[in-house]
Length: 86
Image (cartoon, rainbow, N blue to C red; front, top):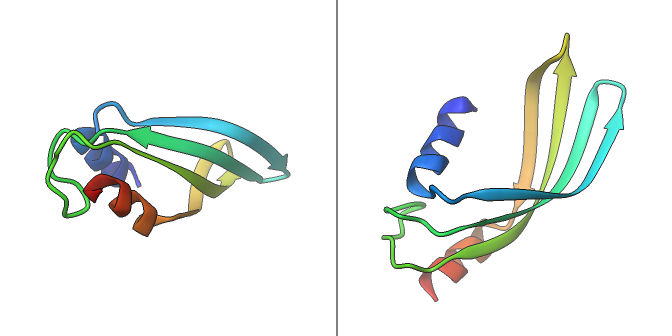
């Protein structure tokens, strides 16, 4: 997961995740966030063009002993690509 996030931050240096909702339940955390950014280099197979994106992401995290052990997320990749290639 860290490698993936580093790759995103490298390609989209202004990446921003704004948390809209945050829920806790025992060892689980659920998040609804708005992701925004402008790729500075090729990302998702799309050359950097100055186009930005704004999408909603839903993520569920499992925590054990104070550490994240699992993450599942859902976002509309097709919408991200549509915005970057429009």
